Length: 82
Image (cartoon, rainbow, N blue to C red; front, side, top):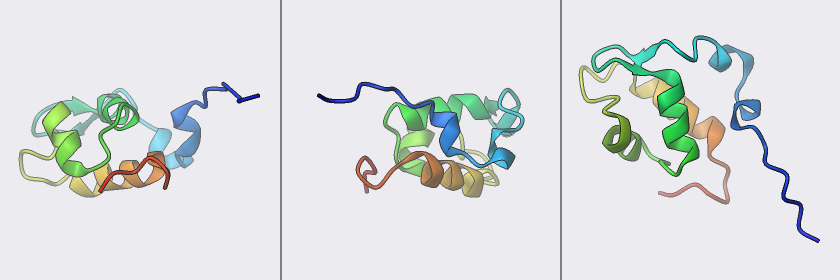
């Protein structure tokens, strides 16, 4: 029988990335970290897809590395899209 247990996506993040979930990760466009996490959990597996859904990384791009880190932590090998 298939296990239908739904894992909390935040469990995949290191403790440091679980901080400040309701603060802006993208300060240029005022996108909170939890909105970016939700976009990734709902299928955005690249920075371009996160950008399209949330507008994060569209300003100076200073948050791009943080968005990439969240994608790496939250997307497993079997659901990551290139």
